[in-house]
Image (tube, rainbow, N blue to C red; front, side, top):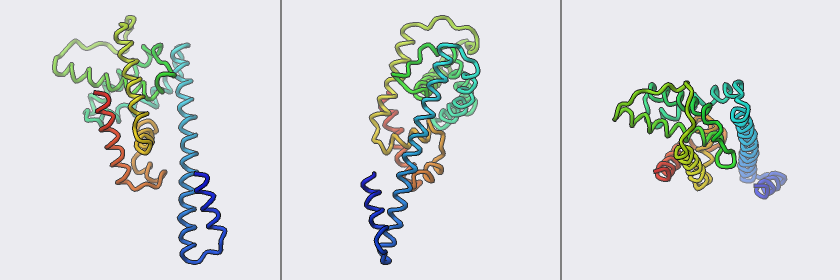
Length: 222
């Protein structure tokens, strides 16, 4: 990136003929996109670190204020994610509530070395939706999501850890151009239009890459 910027600056320093002027404008645009991308990545890392700190506070100190912060940020995003995945509004709302309840009750299972907070939460949401669809096919008594829960079965603990690790691994294996857009769209809560404005990519390219990335993730999580 820095080599490209250096060349661009060198082009701009020359007295521009009309073609050179256009070249300089293209270089300036690339430079601005590169700087914006670096700033965006730093901001994402800072935000991820803040969510890890909040999750650890819930896990270790049962911090209700930090849980409220996590709930306020992730609950609407989980609901939107589930609706984009095909769930209706009622099911998405139900699964989002159950997901955040699980975050509180099973916070001791969170391990930042295995998955980010977002990956962990969205894995729970995915599993809750699968459970809800199974209940629709085979009705069962509805559990009270905010009631006291018994100690989780070790098989459930292992399954959740494996699913979180599997999703994190699948994300890591995506081509970088696809992974970055998935992170911005689902974990950064940016609309595709906002991503286009931030990255300078055509909207059609963004839609295509996100669709391909989701197909890869669905295949990896089967």
